[in-house]
Length: 302
Image (cartoon, rainbow, N blue to C red; front, side, top):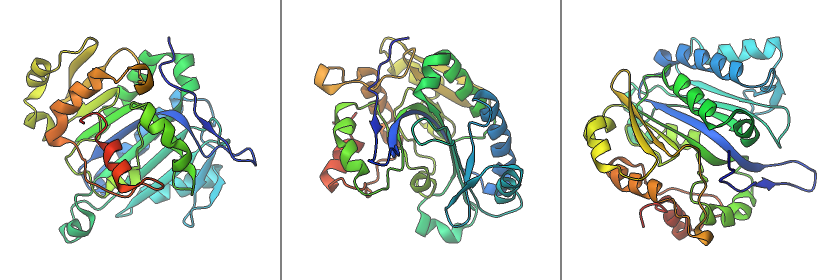
């Protein structure tokens, strides 16, 4: 497998790595948390079976402090997911440089009184793999894992691909990452907590793998309609059960490189097709000017 992405290791003087490149798999479900929590637990079991034993070693407690994910920690995690109107669970690996990551934000999506404040809330979940995992197991295995996870959710949309991950809200981190953001368009930035309150039936993308459910898939003409409009070499559109589909852009994830003329034409083609359904609402990006944030969000369209 060729490595079609840069190695990003943003390191502090202490040795801590607040940000790096990774593979991120995300799904958005327009159902209340009470209907999704068991799916989340099943997906977490699948994810754990796919990664190294005890690769997830710490959890965020109610104050946001990291605690050891021992037997009591797992009981705490399940309590945060089950029997509650909301769900928030964040699990990470033991080291910042090569950590795996699981992040879930489950909202009370059926409470219409909150929709004005929250725009269009969903339950959102993210599974983060290291690029070392991608190199060791290959893109076919990563794609198979993403498909296996997707089967567990009544998703409205989802995506999987390269992303800049870590503690992106720390002061100075996004400023240091700016050069990567604008040189490598295929390196995504995904804020699960932000999107959970807003994305609704819209789509975040494009990415290497793009999952579409209803109503977006129907609005785009279904599988047949997508196949008739997507012609880039290596792009495939596969039908999934329960009225869903996955669009795959090539055999492996690709960061592109604007300085080398690799502007990811397949990603740009898909962005134009998806544009009516893309979530492009302007919002704050730490250390970016409003003009930079606007340009980055529309990097595949303009």
